[in-house]
Amino acid sequence: MKLLLIRHGEPDYATDTLTETGAREARHLAGRIAPMDVRAYYVSPLGRARQTAAATLEAAGREATVLDWLREFDIPVERPDVKGTSPIAWDWLPQDWLRDERFLQPEAWRENEIFRRAHVGEAYDAVTGAFDALLARYGYEREGRFYRVKEPNTDTLVFFCHLGVSCVLMSHLFNCSPMQLWQNIAMAPSSVTTLVTEERRAGIAVFRASAIGDVSHLYAAGQEPSFAARFCEVHGDGMRED
Image 1 (cartoon, rainbow, N blue to C red):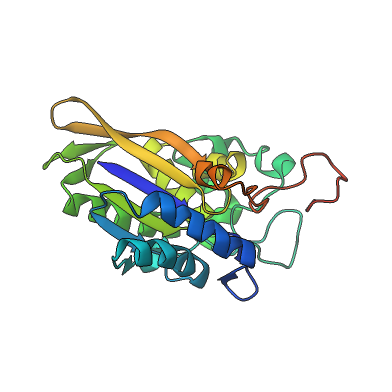
Image 2: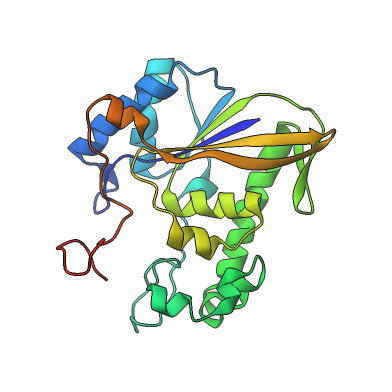
């Protein structure tokens, strides 16, 4: 089985739509994804993801199922350095989240006091539980830390969604803390992350990433990837600092 996690094109977050650049990214993406043999398409209910998916779906003559749990994982918390505000759960400064060793553990990350107050762990479980239920429909049932293969297949499932929720799904598949992925991976707008099952023993599968944040379709079209999802590379270089 192959899973493609596709981040939406460059967003205008204020209107939950794509910018002109994002719309071009979606068209370039469609040229790559539409010719593929895809079993099913799924999409977040948010506008920027649905607009990104629309170009591919039109080119492929297909429809996508809207899944509410594919929406961005934007559970509000009170970040340690920003009192009185509620940014998304994973928008922390490195010097703050790295002070808590629990964030580096596969299960203990959810015991951070700020996360517990905001019920981040419960929200994570709701998303990953729905994800596992979907995979079970295609013959892969979660059993502990791996998947029991009931009906082996080479189906491709495509998910048009967001950076934060993609990291939630990958952390679940990889059995690691989502905080590490949220903080250490930047997947550009319209990027494609490919996850493929490895079944070296009959009936047992794990997922491995063959590509994370691939934007080769943009380079092929001569378009520079958008900067969204990244912060300033050198302090004071004019990019977002936080």
